[in-house]
Structures are given as C-alpha cells and as structure tokens.
Amino acid sequence: MLADKVQTIKKLSTDITLLYVEDNIGLCNNMQKLLERVSDNIIIANNGEEGYKKFIEHKPKIIITDINMPKMNGFQMIKKIRALEPECKTLILSAHDEKEHLHAAINLEVFRYLNKPTRIPELIDAIYDTILAIHKEENRRLFLNQLQSIFNYQNNIVAMMFEGNFILPNQRFLEFFGVDTLDEFNETFNMNQLLLEHKEFLYSSDSQSWHEKAVKNTGILFHTKMENHEGIRRHLILKAREVPEKEGHYILSFDDITELNLMSLFDNESTNIDNIAQDKMAVITFMQIIKNNSSEIKIHNFYKGLTIVNPAVILKITDNEIILKTVNSQLKIMQLTKFTTISSEIFPQSVVCKSIEDIDIDNQTLTIKDMHFSQRTATDRKFIRLEPSEEQACSLFYREIKFTSETTVIDISEVSAKVEIKALPAGIRIDEKINLTINIKINKKQTSLSTEATVYRMEENKRSYYLVLLFDLGTKDKKLIREYIVNRQMELIREFKKLNIT
Image 1 (cartoon, rainbow, N blue to C red):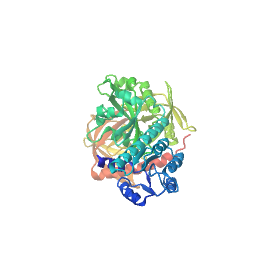
Image 2: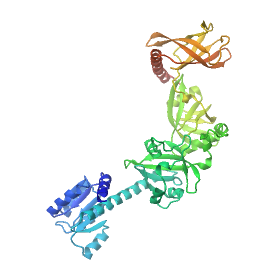
Image 3: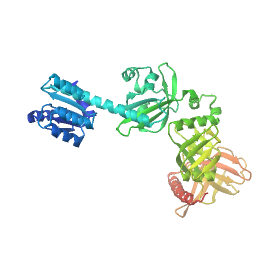
Image 4: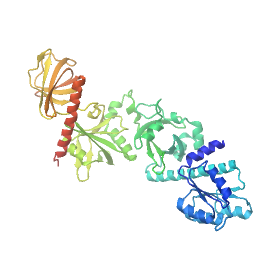
C-alpha cells in the first residue's frame, strides 16, 4: 500500500515542486534523502527567511516546514507566502503541539500538522493526500475554465478525461447515467463498452477503444450511440478537445441529437433513406449541428480533374440558405464551375450543391440554396482523373478492327480513361473487351501506352458518345501513367494560379 502511494506521488508530482524548511542540519539532510525517494523536485531551506526567498524563486506548490527557526519562524513564513499564493499547500512538522500552535495553524489554513518525530508512513500519507488535493483543485479549475470557453455546452454531457478515465463530470453527465458520483459511475459502467455499435458510428473495436480514437482526433465530430439510465438508446455527437494547460487531459462533450431522428440515415435497411437524402432540411439540420459545435466542413471542387479542397466555416443558417466562409482560391474555382461538393465527418453522404447563389470575394463568403445528400460524388474517387493538356487522340480496336471514327481522350487515370467518339461500332456493349492505345507526353517525350480495356459505361450525347474504359496496366506502363499524372497535376496548379477570374 505504501509503495503504491509512493508510485502515485512520483507519477503525479512531475510538475510539482516541494520546499522543505528545517534549521536542524542533520534532520534536514535525512529528510532530504527521504523526500528525494518520492519526488525529483525538492528545494531545501534552513530557516524561514531563506524559505521565503526560495519560495519566491521556485514557486513550489507544497511546503513542509518546522515552526521554531531563526530569523523567521514557520508561521511567519507561511503567512507571507499565503499573502502571495493562497493556494499553496503547507505541512507543519513540529515537536510542539501546544494549543496556540494548533490554532495558528488552523488560522493559516495549514493542510496537515504532524508531530515530530514523524513516522515515514504518516509523512507519505500526508504528501499523498496533498498531491491528490492539488490535482483535484487543478482539474476542477481547468474544467471550469474549459466550460467557460465552450459555448452551448450547458445542456451537453461534459466530462474531463485523463488516461482513458473520466476524472470530472458535469451534472448532466451524472443525470444521463443515473448516478450521484463519478465513483458510482465507475463501479457501474465499463468504459470500453459505453458506446454501442452502429454503422459509421464511433465505438470500441478489437484494435482500439472509442476514447483512444476520440482523443487522437481532437476537434473531429463523431456520431455515437449510448444508453441512458432508463435503458433508452440515444444518438449523440461527440467532440473531444485537448486542455492546453495540462498535457494528457481532454474535455469530451456529448450533444444529444436523438430528437432530430437522423440515425436512420446511417441504416442501410431504412426505407426512408433515399427520401431523407433528397431532403434539403436534412442537410440543413446536419449543418446546424456542425455550427453548434464550432466545427468546419470541407469544400471540394475540380479544375480539369485537379482536386481543390479547403475548409469552410458556417456563418449563418436559415430555413432556405446557408452562408459559408472559405479561402479565395476555393471561391475562385466555384466562379468557374458554379457548383460544389461539401463533406464532413458527420455527414452520412457528401452534400452536392448544384448551384451557388452568391459569391462575395471581398468578404470571402458564398451562399448556397440547392443542396442534397448524394450517395456517390467525385470526392469518392479512389484514383485521380485529369483532363489531358491538349486534345489527346487515341486508337480503339474492337474485335481486331480499328474504330474509324475520330476518338479523343476526355480524362485519364491510372486505371481508366473516358473517351469521346463520333460513332459507335456495331455490336459494342457494356463489359465488352477492346484494345486501347494512347500517346502521352512525359517530359516533352512522346510515349505510347497500349492495353486491353473493358467498356464500363456508355453515354450518348447530341453528336457523339462517351465511353468509360477500365484497364489494368503492367508495372512499366503504370509507372509511366503515374509520372504523367504527377506532371499534369503540376501543370494544372500553375494554370489555375494564373487564371484571372472576377
């Protein structure tokens, strides 16, 4: 038991300095050796005056002192120190236990009064209790400071976490789980099983607990499902944030959104998912959750296949429109495309905005109205697809016969190509095999790529057809196409920067 307390003192006192004041040199040396076994931050003084000076210099959080000393006694020193730092914890070691001394100690709010000679277990207990008291006060102070800095958390479930355990909950936390104290919570609930499994929600897996993932992704919003004390399963948004003043400490906030009825969007069996996905108000509801949690969204656009992604904050939400603020480069590309895609870690799907209502370059804002969830968007692409640098011709062979119609590459990736053709050969269908040859330029040198491809999709236009072809290149050709795509990306970045869009 004593050894466990010593280990706890060592663990919790890494940032706590202890000042020991004693005028008896022999006793002081012996006590110093003992104290250095439990802490690496020990300061020694041999009278009250020296002790006060050492306090000014080192700002210790704990003082252990004798009473009767030359130049300045222990009570005088404590009084001067408390005038500067009322939170400092003091322990008195004295051979005298007269009532006058005890009353003086009480008036000075001395944390513990021990009689000399002090037994080692008694001293360790006193230091242990002092360390725990300091940490409890610091945690409470940090907790309150964090609550003040986070608006809209008054009705949320909020708790401070350290080393995978809750160390300080708010009242809403206790009410949700139907407990009176944190100790009662720890006795009743298994931390790793607190979040229930649900598709795309946060919960513990065999490789990682839910709280480990949460604190490794501070600022990210997570969907969670928890059961309250009445056995009712609730849908909550979790956000973890690091406490800047204290390493390893985190504030976790759970925002209960059950009444919004959004859980069905994550359920494949839901018969309403398509209708909800097309519902503009569902998008607005998720946007409001993000705004309430002071989080960001990401805006995605494409310039000739080049992905342009930047964060945005939500400034205003009404029943009809949303105003966002983002960087000028993103606004610039939206002036070209007139549409955008928005993503967030809490969206069940990406949001497609088919039209941009207004773009204000001066204020760096855009207004969107026409929006809905989409099961598949360009942001889901696994491979980069880019438009060629110039009109790129290619050759297609179907059943060993070359397409006679003019054929042009619209875009290309390392696994696919979209080509435009004026007329289709008779009999060609989806999943048919054809041979494809493309000439590409890498570092000003023409290179030819030839491969077998599969017709994945066919689209009919007014005067032409689009064919989407899938292929699996060999190692050499795959290396070439990757080099081409990297070079083309750099070209497009330079080209985009030179655009003069007003």
